Length: 373
Image 1 (cartoon, rainbow, N blue to C red):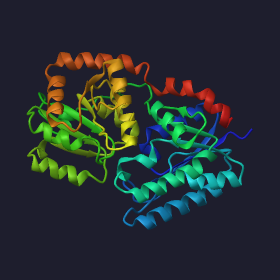
Image 2: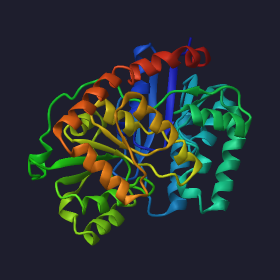
Image 3: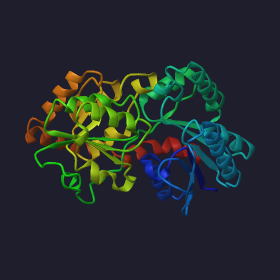
């Protein structure tokens, strides 16, 4: 039996915990896994490893970007001898489907979010129509569809008339920090100041401007941003305008295997996704679970799936990301004493014993392996 799997992803596989965990779990069960991925931010040339390829893309011209991406992906997939291909996003789905159908290869579509309803398309109806058309054309051709949350599954099943989809949430491995990073010393932060942490892509709709404005009213906190993205310069400007540029640190992207060491060294995790689209309303981001795994109390949006997790495990506080007063109040409540933080940390540590990749994948494995084995 051919147990070769290929994973295609428009992103850097080394910076993506879902692909890293999926690949490692499949390999542990005897599958031979190769990954085709792309990067336009952090590498200067193509990177080839034993089973992972990362192709450098130039984002300066959108047409050239997508043409180059499509050409390289098609060229690589033509050479594959895998029996299963994972399309890890809507961008890879059409080319994956074309190659898979021509060669009798099974397709796994990982719908990481509701792509036709993401925030960036909310005011671009023509582009939204194109994305809907692409997804509706190819999604029913997949042998199995994965989502990251129950609400996403219910929405897609109803919207596209799909059979039952499989939920595999974006949950990190059960692990503890390998070593302690002294963020206070690294960034010259006074020891009596608390560190608010946001990790992820720097884009709109994440409540970051509200937090920056909030800390201008709270004197004993710093905001540490781990990640990069198109809105970085905008956030830097907001920090300057609110006279807190010295307390907002842009640390850049941290490689996945080291991330928990940074996360665990902060005090509060920020997960303030805004309700600006259907996709965002359904949000259940991996950063929420990464904070919990690292023992970090969470400041979370009141979006239904996020709120359910935070309240079920008493892992933090809910706040409206559009209300500066509410965010200020919540931050002050979280940092009012070390005992408050300690209690939430203990709750997070207990929750991590349930909310981990090992348990999540073990639960989903029978349905997934029934299709791909």
